[in-house]
Image (cartoon, rainbow, N blue to C red; front, side, top):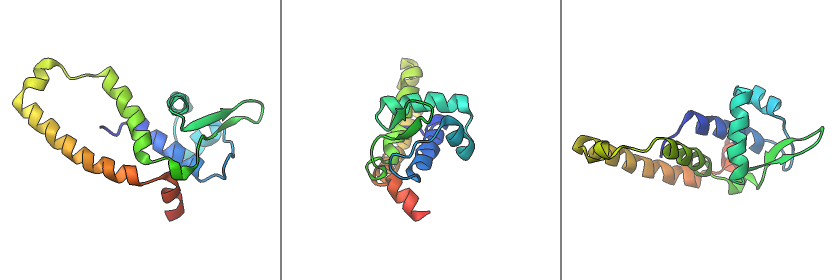
Length: 133
């Protein structure tokens, strides 16, 4: 598991939506301005979040995005996992790299650290984040 730029930006955007009342719709421009994320990146991020059932869109003149479920049912790990899967699909390790002993040891150490990180992220919901700020 890796925390990519896209996952970091997605975490910010979801946290922004989590601070809003349930069902309150925000436009791309509002979210981008508040989070400091370029609009073109936000469009791609929200496509992934929408496919994963994290956000939903409201159509029409007053449309935008809101959380698809309550903030206490969305963990940080949910978000990071979406973008980690996409990264893995684009850049698999070559067989030669996997066979190299140093690379395998390094990957194992990273994996152990990431498992611990995943345990922490799995316990933290966006409702927790919003209530502690």
